[in-house]
Length: 75
Image (cartoon, rainbow, N blue to C red; front, side, top):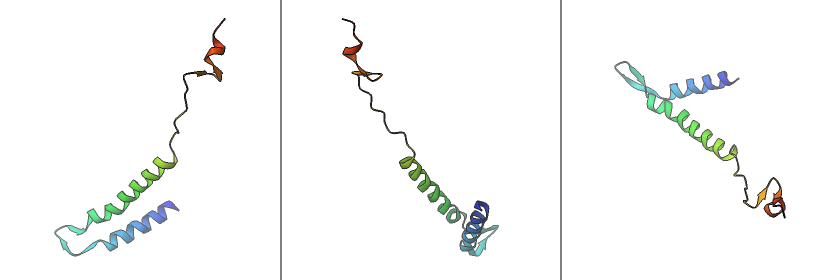
């Protein structure tokens, strides 16, 4: 399914960015063709950075393994 969708979108993008008059061997505006997937990758990076990050762990100096420091001291 992903190959089909990707190939279809790539074909449409390539057809959209075909130059009216080719310059020597260049018949497509490759910079414009690759700009859309690059921005898509940036968007995916932002989404993953926001939603798939480790939250900072709360560490308190006075708590060790669920017990307070004064409970660990011997009288």
